[in-house]
Amino acid sequence: MTEFFIKNLSEIKIDELRDSKSVAIGLDVGDKTVGIAVSDGNIKVASGAITILRKGTDTDFQLLQENIKRWKIGLIIVGWPLQMNGLPGKQCEKVLEFARRLFRYVNVDFAKWDERFSTKVVDNLMISADLSRKKRKKAINHNAAAYILQGAIDFLNNQSNV
Figure (tube, rainbow, N blue to C red):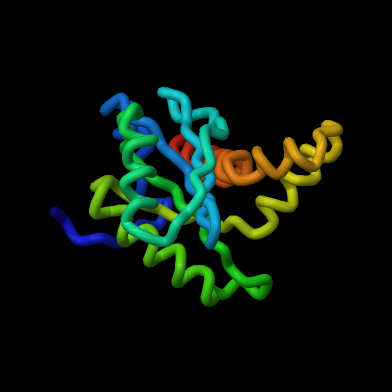
């Protein structure tokens, strides 16, 4: 097994992912839940998939692995919860540790994407779509993961066109 580290997104070659027929997944890692999103096969569009309730044990990672093994994953984008001043804080340390542990189960490239405001933006979109509080609560995490993943996908696609 290779050593774990989170790559800069600019190091990722999207054409290689497409050639290997892989998808990218996005994770919105929280203390209580993990929202999961998946890209299409062309790595152009992100869709919210599932939300896993965390128990704080290896069971979290086994459950995550079981839920994502149906996809041929080439890249995992983790939401990077920077502080408002743009610096990493305590929550970034938690996400990094989560990604390190997940790497033991899913040995692919990891990259990070600034997730500031992702949950708030998605919540506002769902409010404007007139979703009830109950429906928003059920869907917020995996839709925030889709928002994070879509931002990273757009960056990768724009970078490959340069």
